[in-house]
Image (cartoon, rainbow, N blue to C red; front, side):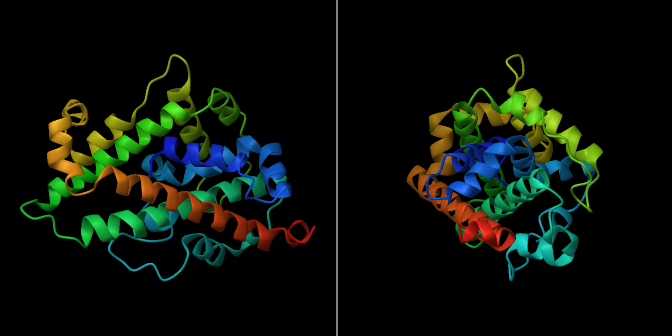
Length: 256
């Protein structure tokens, strides 16, 4: 559910996180373009038309009984053995993406949007509020992305890295995201959300820019302090799941 900019910001922070073993960080830094692509490409289902269960390994409205990244490896056992370092870094990025989405679903969306009643608020208005909070997070993270992101991302060259998504779709999504980060590019988040909401993106922009509307529609139900705390929890969970994946995949490094 978080946007590509948020996933790239998480990946950026992971690359410099001293809580990860240095050998893991060295791998991800050596293969940074592949790691970046892995961190965003699950959302290429927007372009491919695949259902969430195909690319994220869970469906809305159903309980999460298994870590999505573990479900991916169970359903596609060939991914348990990466072909080379670039493939491994790409899969590590994919694991990080699935972990961040899982944490967001469990810590924010399910308890605070779908399971909690907002007195006097219709379900459609809660769906709109969810996209408002995602856009707040998205725009904050876009501003924090470092200048190398677009050039580095474009260097990623998938080579049949996924059995459930072709390279052409991966490259199409890579270029769509990188193009938004170019100096002459601009974010497409509101356009994409507008399509999902069946609403003019200008109306979403107007709500975001109106403090009273944001208070009425969002912050009185989900305070900014809660967003900050869930953001922190999502990051820690993502880092822990990434470390678990690499520890299982690279046992020699884990014991070094």
